Every structure is written in structure tokens, then in C-alpha cells.
Amino acid sequence: MRYSDSLRQMEYRTIAGLVRKESSVLDLGCGTGDLLSLLAVEKNVRGQGIEIDERSIYACVARGLSVFHGDIDSGLSEYADKSFDYVVLCESLQEVRHPDIVLKEALRVGRKVIVSFPNFAHYRARVQLFFRGRTPVTPALPFPWYDTPNLHFLSIGDFIAYCSLRNIRIARSTFLCERGTIRLFPSLRALVGIFVLSRPETPPHPSRT
Image (cartoon, rainbow, N blue to C red; front, top):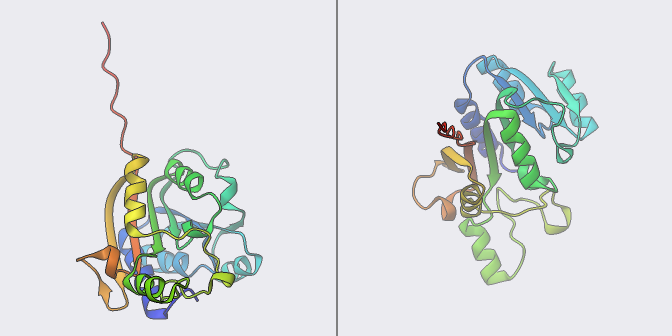
């Protein structure tokens, strides 16, 4: 469990609300398939997952989900450009070794990319760092430093700045706390950030005569 069941379910349902019915979805780091299963039932998607943990794959197969064993850090070379309507990175971007490469590949393979991650700049994390001088433990970051799957700790502001630097278009963003959606000061108050991304279309070069 990454954090409270209520917040996790809120995150899954928010992502499901961003996905069009009967679309194709590639879930990178799909875990035991909770999100893929929800999308299959409620949105009738053509879903496929990639997961590195074998026990999680067995759980997905038991649920009737299509999941391949693979390391998303190694790239998605087996998939053609824009071969999925959506590529989803739900709580997995901060767990990979090379998030820049993974996100670049996701944007190549998907027409849209949905990314969610825990916000390291939540006020509880700031308070713990300032007053205790210790690595924060919060509802969205529940693991101690020595036993965490997270390799990269990023904030909502970090991610927005990254997208601007990489010329990635943020089509939509949603921010969650345990009580629901956050609209004011999300970098301070949100536990989870959810973003819908795409690459800007490159304008054609004017023809020369």
C-alpha cells in the first residue's frame, strides 16, 4: 500500500475520469493491476500493462489482465509511435532510474500521457524537514528512507518546470489531498499531482518556391 486506501482510490478514479471510453491504454509499472482493472470495467479500455515484479504479474493474470514482464527503464522500443491513446505512469515515474528517458518514450508511444506522483513539497514534508531535520514520512510518502521504492523525490513545482524545459504540453492537471481536490496552493497542500501530457504538434515548415 502506497498510502491510505481512500486517497489511492481517489487517485485511480481521477485518472479513470481522464480516459476516454473504449480507448487503448498502456500502464507502465501497473503493479497488481488495480487501475487497469478499474479502466477495463468502467471504461471498457483495451488495456495492457508492463510490470517488473513477477508476483504482481501473477496477480494481474489472475484478474484476466494482459501484462508483460519488463523493465520500463529499458525503453519501449517494441512499440510504434502513437500506438496507444494513453500511456499511464501512476506512481511509477519517481520509482524508475531514468525518468527523463521513460517519459520521453511514453510521449512517443502514447497520444496522451497521464502521470501521477506524490508531492514531496507538501507542507507536512516541509515541516518535518525544517523542524526535525529528517527525511519526511507523509500519507503520500509513507516509507522510511531506507525502505522506499522512490528513487526521485519531486514536487509539483519541479514537474511543471521540467515540462516547460522539455517542451511538454500540460493539457490538464488535478491535485488531491485526503479530503478531495485541491485548487489553491497545490504545491503546498496537495499530496498527489496528476497531469495529462502531450507533445506540441510541430508546425510544418513553409514551402520554399
